[in-house]
Length: 206
Length: 374
Image 1 (cartoon, rainbow over the protein chains, first blue to last red):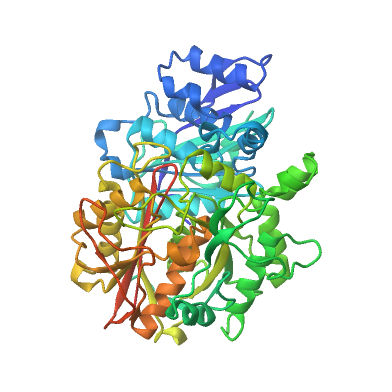
Image 2: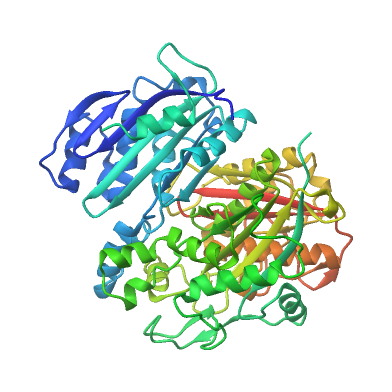
């Protein structure tokens, strides 16, 4: 598959760091996951009360999307239906599922139950940004750049979407990794071709 | 020119029957899987749902009920299909919302359990059983997962990457799932009533279904997948859109892709979960897409809401409806209870049918639509 689409920006959150387009923007290696996510939210001076209700997977994905899009995404150039997401992970919503399961031993909590689906992180990002286009959440044992590229290229090449946020968002207990890519049809001065090689080299960077 | 994607074979595996034909024959006689259940392992109180009986499914050693449902459904669909699962141009696509989550209830929580619960483990076991050589694709996108399986398969086949796609979906009802829906007060204390004035919630159900797709021209007389689309409400993570515009958008995009107008849609298999909000939103979406006169049903009164399998079970039954040119009614429907009326089918009736539209919506604000046709 020829790389006709372009990675406009990328964001990695893992091992206590937040990296955007290859530059480390924030570091907090001492904190546990919950404190780390809160420190990211505070560092970037985000103001979104819904954040506090999210589970870890949604917080992680949402934060990565905020950093990804900031100053990189020209929102007013797109209709809501023209922007979508393709995300994947290994553990689905298991991190939150376990929390819900424990809570249900006493009283089942609807605010925990709603996060027992991995696509809710997509929902949170869509609500925040008014993205109404195509989306999909896939489960993979390992990040499969080829598959993600195939899905995203199809959506862009067929004009189903004009911009797509794609990548990997996974959390299980204290292990977490988010790698998001903003992919569009037209290049910018700093964009990279949306090729499997580039997707993987960004994914594997620490 | 986009390649045609044909439906080669299918299966529904449910408390009503083990094959598509068995299921459809039972539905024609108004049989339903939804009953009052007294199952302490799932709920301390009685509840209405469509569940397999103990012993209905013969679970192989090393597999779970969830995996066995997929294996049995795929097995039946593959039989006499002419499709070779070991062919490198064949891909397996699996849809599920919660897979083996019930293992949390019965097993000690260890890292090994976390691996065992992962949907990719289930997909691998199912793939190995049949000898699929390609890595399976696994969709977990709430209640639109089944419809997304068909759309993903259709698109992959159109790119020419594969020639055949075995699309299977399943979900099993456990205490985890039931308690969750109960915490939302989403369950009806009786058989559900889609689009009805007195509707008061959904029934859960378990089951599996398989649709085998191919672009091989030897199937050119078969029913085709004509188009599909997915959208997001961008409104609320557990309640649907206030306007129905986003589901309407997915419907319109599907029609556009299929090259059809609303007049070309013979009937609609709606999501129709019988919650106050879903049915209202869905009916409004139908009206926005100018489909309010098209005969419409919801199969949730027969199967309950089968979550990740719903889009597939209901598509297969509707494909059978299309083949037999016979519309199934909507059990539980009596009086219109949505502000934008839709044409709910009241009785089993013959119809000259060329196409149908299947819709689905789910938590996370997702919507999907797919069109099948002759």
